[in-house]
Amino acid sequence: MSENEKEEFAFIKEKIKNKPLNKRRIILKMAFTVVLAVVFGLVSCFVFTWMRPVMEEWLNKPEDIKVSIPKDEEVQPDTEEETNSTETGVDEPDVEEGLKELTPEEYQKLQSKLYAIGSEANKSIVTVTGVTSDVDWFNTPYERQGQASGVIIADTGQELLIMTERKVISGAKSIHVTFLDNSTVEAELKNYDGNTGIAILNVKRSDIEESTLGRIKVAVLGNSLQTTRGSVVLALGSPLGTNFSILTGNITSTSNSISTFDANYNVLTTDIVGSSQGSGVLVNLSGEVVGIVMQDYSSGDENTLTAISVSQLKDIIEKLSNGQDIPYLGLKLTSVTSDIEKEYDIPKGVYIKSVRIDSPAMVAGLQSGDVIVKIAGENVETAQAYKNVLSGQTPGDVVKITIKRQGAAGYVEIECSATVGVLK
Image 1: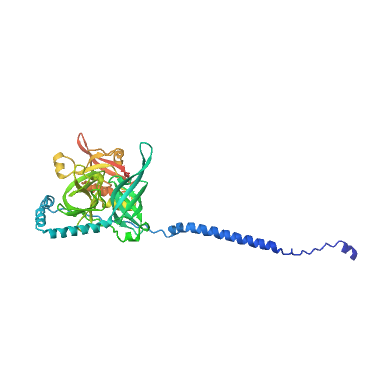
Image 2: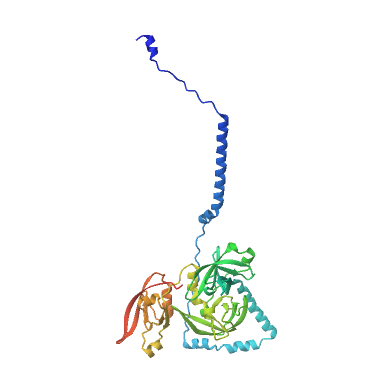
């Protein structure tokens, strides 16, 4: 093949040249990139600002602080003589004679000291207001308020816990707490016990003014089992319907009791004039709370103030303060003493006076007249022992209960199983 022929079949060679720069297009791309960066920055700033409190609360969420309330053990008197002397109040004449010997000036000083104790203890008292909505006969909506005293029982560092009555905040759309300096904040229901009617509220410390925090304090729950007839006590709260009142008087009886489901509680009776609508607490001369005045347990036919022994409520208060439910079976009980055992030929144990309808106890087959001798593997001979064992259970637990039921041939031992519930 000749050189000329080779040239005829040669491929065409091309050289690709770079496209010339378009400055206008480059400027537009840069501007678009800047706009996107600005938009991204604004969106990021908005999202960060919106999410920051949530993230901080999630990342810095404080550990739950468990509230612990020391329990009191009842000291049994060594002899019957000591018991009788406590209840009959043989020391009262000496106290009365001592008061008679006081001059008016000395008596005024004594009253001033008592008032000072009450004023200091009043720093733990609050007024709880529950606001509910309702309509009248003409379908006109209106708001209704219920009030009761409350007592500050714990400070977790994040919130204050306040004990009050469930009755006044039941169905409330909002709950307000008023402190001694008349400052008011909103509160939330933490938990309540449908049996005793005790409710625990929580108030965020961040919602309370620093000046108010400096004027309030947490109450000390004393040992009411050491309170005897003749003991001087002060009634705080609203025993007569006036908030932050301070009334003084004496314990006149500690032998009365009230019966609720699964527990019996001692009642402290005083000579202090009260109201069936009164609420508050009783404190001793150390400023410690020894009794809880509750409207549901006020004596309707008497004008004197009564309170439930706080020592017997401490386990309930502790559980509710930690958000726990109170175990419930639904029995009203009494202890079979040695005298009852001999006189009526009833086995020693815990006698069932009544069973609540549709309660876990009724579902388990327990009946009035049965005598409980063992629960959850523990032998029980008193209503207090039964309460202590039940208090150690958790709602949902299945407990075995051994009872003695009267039949034609005498008492027969029967074993039942009950699922622990919650009364709301």
